Length: 286
Figure 1: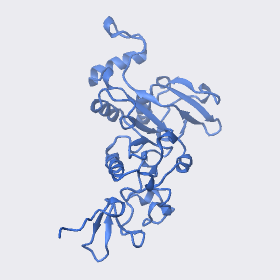
Figure 2: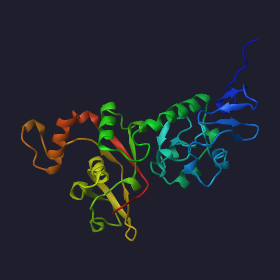
Figure 3: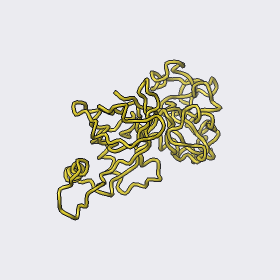
Figure 4: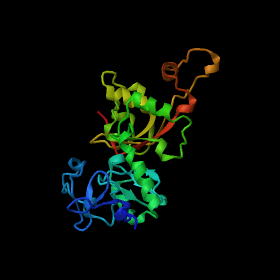
């Protein structure tokens, strides 16, 4: 008789070499008989309100934990990556029907549509989800902030990116963006206003320089005048000219187009290297 099939609970490998039989989830080993992990959650410090030995924050009906780290974004029932709620790539693991997903939706709204682990329609869907998850930690936007060099490297590694594929986007946490010297009076509470961050960049702070480089001319709305909180629309990270024809051979007249020309020459970036930026959460003016 051959070896017994070991991939059982959750599609994870059954480990029977120990005194206590457990399932290998990757980040931790799980004892299904007790409903407990045998190791500390490697992300426990981010969830101080629950035990570091908890499973899916004690809510197995509404949450999924494919690796034992409970640190996945939002996926559809086929295991395909959809994007993030307002907590970003390090938010809670949620599986939902694609038609209920909106990029940057509130976490509470996302949870109201959660199908739990049972929402995945096959073992293949589970494997697809986990394979995507395993690469999240290597993404430049894993922490919600992208430097100039990271954005350029991403662009070069994703030429002619399919804008309809959420995996090609970078996801920015609005709370980590630095809007430099922008005046609150430039914005309104009623609608998004297109603002050129080049006019307010603080050249003494790298966070402001990186933010300005990523967003450039972007749509911002004031949502609380007392706390100076702002909301942003998604954007495009590209090196496209607005008012310049490169075939003319002339030096661009606008500050933005001159900077674009210099960056193209410096980095080797061209029209094929654009990709979407998805922004979640809310930001705050300085």
